[in-house]
Image (cartoon, rainbow, N blue to C red; front, side, top):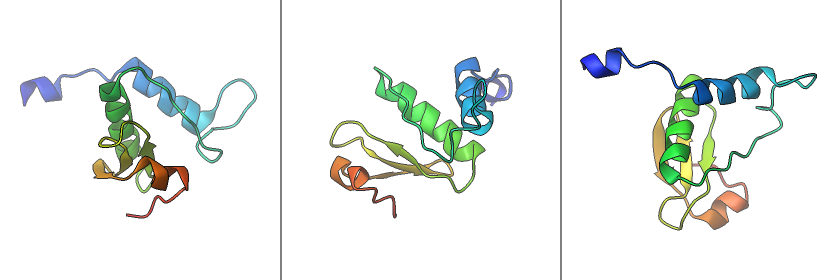
Length: 93
């Protein structure tokens, strides 16, 4: 519990959140347009999706990974979905 209370927020996560909400340069936030974040590591994507789904309540975050790891995260909860369903835009629980 002490470790959880004393963690600094990851600057990369904060930067992604800033780009989604406020945008960059002369562009507005990207959240309404949609955004794809690529990572070599599934753990990084899962952490980012969890962070963003908690920070932006009600926003569904798709994780497009291997067959068994693809899914939707909303409000910090993950549900497995096939990549096919995600590709079709089927974000319903």
